[in-house]
Length: 135
Image 1: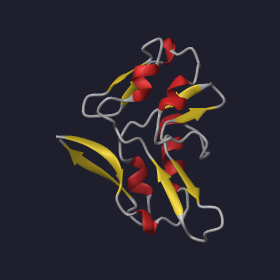
Image 2: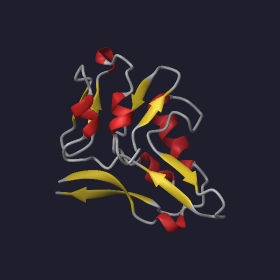
Image 3: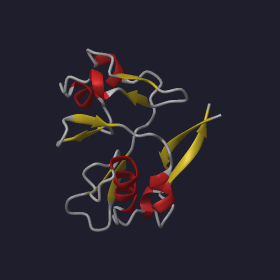
Image 4: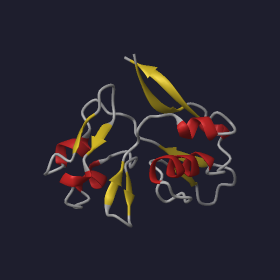
C-alpha cells in the first residue's frame, strides 16, 4: 500500500523548522529551510499558531496538467516525479498548485518536489507529520 506525507497533529507544531532542515539536508545537501519541499509558516498576529504545507499527493495533480514539457509526471502511489532536464523554468506548476504546497528553488529556478520519504516526520519533535498509508 502506498504511503504519503500528511499533517496529522498541526496544533502541536512549535515552528522549529526541524522538518524543513531535514528535507533540505537530505535531498538538496543544503543547510537551509529554503530548499525544503514543505513549508512551515506562522500566522501573523497569532502567537504559537503555524501552518504546515506539504504535498498532498493529489490523484490528478494540477502541476502535471499545466507542465508544458512533461517535466512532472505522476508518481506511483501519489505525488509527482520531476525530470529537471525537461524543465523550462516557467513556474506554471507553482501557480497551478492550489494548496500552495509545491515549493520553488529560487537558485536553480525549478520546483522542489516532495519525495514522500518521511525524513521530515522523523525529525519532528512533536509528531506533527506522518507517513500515512493511503489507498
